[in-house]
Image (cartoon, rainbow, N blue to C red; front, side, top):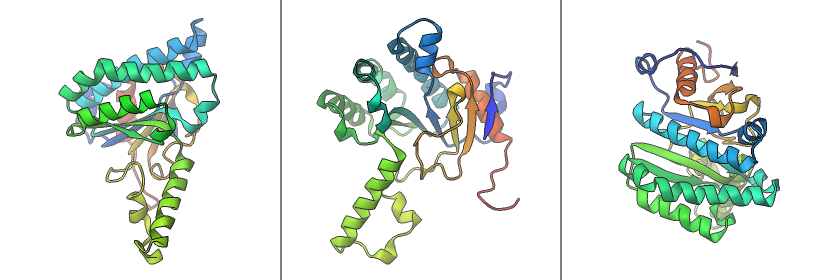
Length: 250
């Protein structure tokens, strides 16, 4: 795990000279602390976080990242105050309403991951609308993790495989890593090459537990609302200068 507290002078042109990570995952953390440090309500931090996401999506399109997965709302986030949860859900609806035309035009596919059925009906309808409007796009797949937990996802997979075995649709000896991947929310997608965590926290918070097995981790103490393309550029530059071993010796 690497930790960097501040941005660098790495330019976009520099990272384009090397291989860009195909799949980037981001834990969008620090909205609440950002707001508190400015004497603002937590909802203001979440709104600023949405603006940060817009900038990162545009930059990922610009440098040809193919998959971007963002942790928007975890299964544990239900423990937060109800007014904060309501504000977050309204922000999701607002983001879809305001950005869907631009996302569709620019080739972004909105792909929700998580237990969407556990959300309010109006949120489900908005998310389904975003998916339907962008499902033919393939320039950038934007996985939005909502009501998502890594352990919950693995539990879901186990139950679905067990049911298929019970129904004689699957043999126990058929079960291997490749088959398990076909039951994940991210099936048919490559695992994240790089996971980024703003806010300085050194943990992955129940995010993509299966998929992150060999992802490179990059942490910064910059809060998510202040995370800019220059910070993503720095993260990618560091990633490009690592040697990925996948458990082997090189």
